[in-house]
Length: 330
Image 1 (tube, one colour):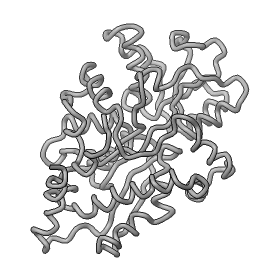
Image 2 (tube, rainbow, N blue to C red; image 1 turned 180 degrees about the vertical axis):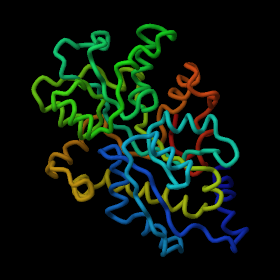
Image 3 (tube, rainbow, N blue to C red; image 1 turned 60 degrees about the vertical axis):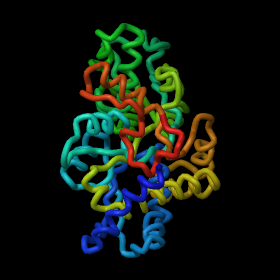
Image 4 (cartoon, rainbow, N blue to C red; image 1 turned 30 degrees about the vertical axis):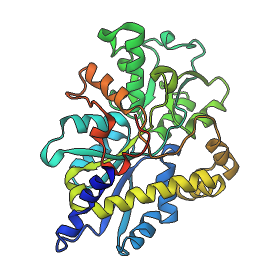
């Protein structure tokens, strides 16, 4: 059945050969180890290589860096990018309300990494210790994956009526700016961080972990999802398949050769870490790069339960293109 669905998805290119697919693929990404598969794709030119194999040697690929999910989804809806890669909440929100030209589908995930809330406030040992004097940086207030984890924690601690308990002390910052603020003795004294910012922050005296995403969600949740408009997918089935194959090739490279992946990361990010430090991050327990979407339904049901989205899926496959259906998603 899946092969038939994929064949139907790709058949648009055969049914209407006069309609050429796009010659340029514009991707939206962010900074950090979360996005390593895209960094490897960029440095190794994996999309271009897969495109050449698929008979599309002239495909141009553009990587656009955003500071957070809201700006990226705005870019997707305004047609300034073709594909977005960001947190699950942004994806679910668009999927739930998308109709017609705004209909959204996921393509895949790109891994799960340890995500932790850290603080330099010595009085904060648990989430219950935060007060209105603290400030927690996340990529987007109420909308980012990290902010949703805080809201999930608030529901567990205080009930559904107080799901917004931490919203008033949450501020929106991209991860590099959040780390600079945390370590720069500003009013932002906490950060829901991803690697490598998490590990860099923990090396500073006084910075410690308060909780993790796994503790809050009760299991692994993908750091993000690749998604696009159904309109683009239907008009460019070969390009979308090329992107999916390139992502799988990138993930395979990362898992097979951490040294090479670390070198790619530093070449593109131009961070001051050593190759050995980046390679060590790739071996931290809980660091998994794969294409299977994890925890999507859990996150989507929470967003629906709390009134943030108007629809919820019965199964994760409702939200994704059939290319990824063989993966062990949830």
